[in-house]
Length: 104
Image (cartoon, rainbow, N blue to C red; front, top):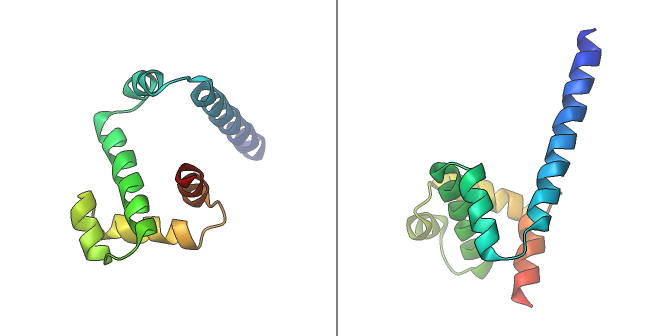
C-alpha cells in the first residue's frame, strides 16, 4: 500500500511540474512572466532565482574568482560553487542551454 501511495504521489508531482512548465511556456511577454512569478513565488524565492542566474552569467563570462562573483552577485560562496557545479558537471545543462541561446 505504501509503495502504491508513493508511486501515485510521484506521478502527481510529475504531472504538477508539467502543468507548471506548460503555464510558463504559455506566457508571451516579460510583463506576463513578471505577473505570474509575482503570484507564484515569494519575493525571497524570486531573489534567489535572480541571484543564481546572475552567478551563472558571471561564471560564464569568466575572468573573476568565485569570491568576486559572490560579492558582485550578492550571493554566498556556497551558491557560487553550486551553480558552477551545475554549469559544468551536471547532466541537465539547463544553465548552459539558456546561456548559449541568449548569446545568439
